[in-house]
Image (cartoon, rainbow, N blue to C red; front, top):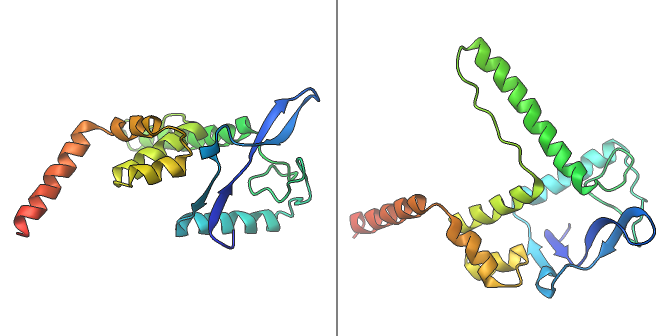
Length: 180
C-alpha cells in the first residue's frame, strides 16, 4: 500500500478443492486479470483507515492462506471475509438504512425512500459505469476492470443511459459555443 497501488496477481477463493471448503489462493481467470491499479487518494485513505481499525481491534494478522497473510478485510478473528460475508455486510447496511428511513418517513408523514439490496459484484459494475460516465479512456477502463476482451468493457461503456449521454453532449456543445 505504500506505493498507493493495488497489485492484482492472485485472488482469494473459498472452495472445496478436495480438502473441504476453505480459503485458497488462485490466479486470476485470464492474463488480463493480472494488473497493477493506482489508487485514488480517497481509496488509499480508506485502506489506511481499515488498517488502523484492524490494529485497534487487535485482529490477528498472522492467519495464512497458501502463504499469504495480512488480509485487510477480515472477520473479528482475523480470517478473511467470505464472499457471501461481504454481501451480508452490504445487506445489513441497506437494511439498517431502510429501517431508519421508514421510521423517519412515518414521523414526517411521507413515503420512505428505500435503497435496493445490492452485492459487491453490483458495486463493481457501478464503479465501471461511473468511470465510463467520467469519460475514462475505454482501454484504461478495460485494464482497470481486468476484462480480457474490449467488447465486455464496451458493453458496460455503452450501457450508460442514452439520455444522460445526450444531455452531457448538449451541455458540452453549449459551453463550446458560448466560449467561442
